[in-house]
Length: 124
Image (cartoon, rainbow, N blue to C red; front, side, top):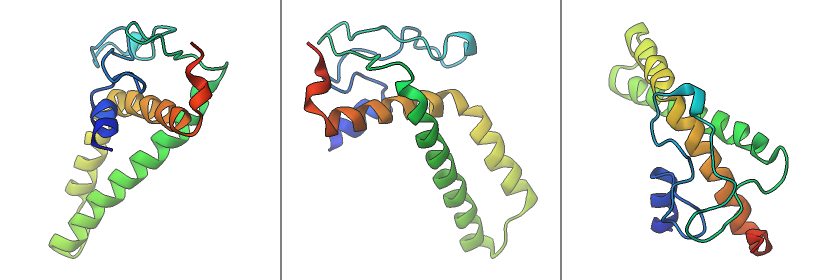
């Protein structure tokens, strides 16, 4: 379980957990944020399983963003008893700042889910 979480956080291949899933490791270059090799350079895992496969990652991204937003606002409610505008704007700013990372993490989570539930998806 910890190996899977580590591969998700570090954006590594879901099969071998060694090779990078994205060609450009920089999170700043938005033009290349979604560029991925077709296969893993280490274990030959197919990253493009079917056309439109990563459409489901959009739902993972939405859920991840909602959980983090509500956790942050819940902490504010527990600490202060209300949600201040400053806390809300800071939370939204942090979400926007980490957008590129959330985008990539959502893709890695989505392919990890697919590989976990289907052992035949390796396509070797």
